[in-house]
Image (cartoon, rainbow, N blue to C red; front, side):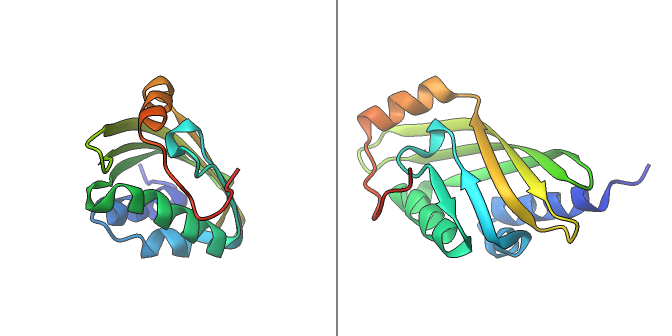
Length: 143
């Protein structure tokens, strides 16, 4: 059985991200991407446009220094969407441990670019407690 082309493309992006290479992820996103995060992202909740999203994600990952890691698996795709499970871990500057399993849903355009991303945190209670103890300070309001 052959995978849907969006499955292979999405999994390739996740494989690159697992290795610390985020360039393929940004190639997947449309210029007018909108990303809405659940409580796992703390104060980095919403971004509109590729530049805003890059700033939000850079600041979020930067909060954890060089400890932030994502390990993702694509679980479903079709012509309109991709659904992924992504295990996210990191350590706050004060030593607090972040550990979350998130569902990422990407809405795909006919050209294969994602124009919308929503995240749902399966470990939402842990995430909320983590951010209460380890408040992040974004450079702007991402709400």
